[in-house]
View 1 (spheres, rainbow, N blue to C red):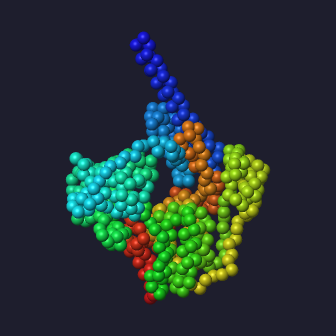
View 2: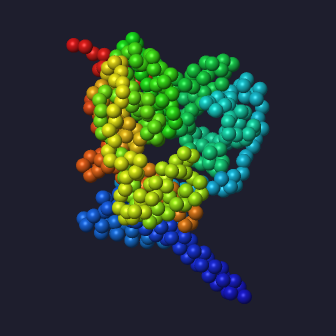
View 3: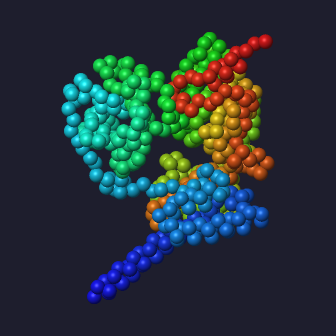
Length: 477
C-alpha cells in the first residue's frame, strides 16, 4: 500500500507538470501565431537573412519553458523583444483577488514616546502620501501607518534590519502589490533627517512645522533616484522666455497648461517645451501645443491598418461587446468594412484617405523661437509630437541622445493568452512614413547637443539643461 501511495503521488505530480508545461507552451504557440499572422511589422522585420535565427529562438524558448516553467514570463518577453518593437510586448494579468490574499500585518506604537525620544530610524516620518511611525522591536525596526494613504491605521508598511553606516535591508508590504512582501534597501541620511528607499521614494522626519517638512521633502535631491518622478511645470523665466514641462500625453495636461498660460506665452519671443521622460499617450493631447508652434503647411502621413482575419475578428468582438468609445461606432464599422474588402493587406481608414495636409489659419507672432528638450525617454506619441514640431521653422530640438524610437507600429490592443496569466500587446497599424523614414530603434536626434550631464531626477525643478536652452534662445551677437 505504501509503495502504491508513493507511485500515485509521483504519477499525479507528473500529470500536473505535464499540464503546466502544456499551459506554458499553449501561451507560446499563441504568441508565435498571433505575431506571425497579425503583427503589421512581421514582414518588415522577418526576412530570408534572419528567419533561421528566429526559428532557433523559438526552438530554444520552447525547450527552456519546459525545463524552467516558473520562468515562462521571462521567455515570453525575450521572444517578443527579438522584434525590437516596444509596443509589441507581453505583460502579466494582475488578479485582484490574488493580490488580496496576502495577509495585512498590524502593530501598536506609542506616539508620544516616539515623538519625544527619536533614535536613528525610530520616530515619526512624513512623505507625499501621509505619515508613519517607526519603532524598534528586538533586532528589527517596524514602520506602522499613522495616516499613510493606501494603508489602514496601525498597518505595517515595512520591517527593517540595520546593516551598517545607516543602511537597512527592508521587507516592504506595498499596497499596490496586494501587500506582497518585497525586498528593498534604504538609507538614513542628513543627520538622520531623511529616510530614502533606494530607487523609489523618500521621507523626512516629521516636525511641528508641516510647511517646512513638505518644503524639505520636495527640495531634497535623492542619492538613489529612480528617474521617473517628472512633474508638470509652467512658469515665466523672464520677460523673454516662458517654460513648459510636459511629462506625458496621457491626459489633457499639455492642452490645459497652454490654454491657462496662453497670454503669458504669446507675449514672449522664446518658449521652452521640456518633454524629457514623456513616454507618449494620445496625439490629441498635444493639440494646443501644435497649434501654438505652427508656421507653415505640412503633410501628415498617418497610418494604415493591417487587415487580417484575426484583427477583423478582434474588431467585430469589440463592436459586439460595446468596447468602442461613444461616437466612434461609425468610424469602426467603416474601417471594418474596408478591411473585409482587402484581407491580408493594409488599408487606410476611409475617413482619412490619402496623406493629410495640415494647414492652419493662424501663425502666431510669439513665440518666435521654440526650444524642445528631449531624451531617450521620449516614445510613441511624444515622438509623433516631435515629428509634427519639426515642420515648424520656429522649433529647435535640444538634448544629448536620440529619442526611444517607438512609433512605426502603433494602435496596440491586448489579447489574453490561453493560460489567463498574461496579455500580448499587439500593434494593428503601420506608419505610412515607412519604408523611407523609419523611427523604430533609431529615434529622433536633437538639433543641438547639450554638453551637460543629464539630470536623473527632475521632479518639478529647473536644471542646467533648461538654462542652457534659455541662454541659447536668448543669445544675441
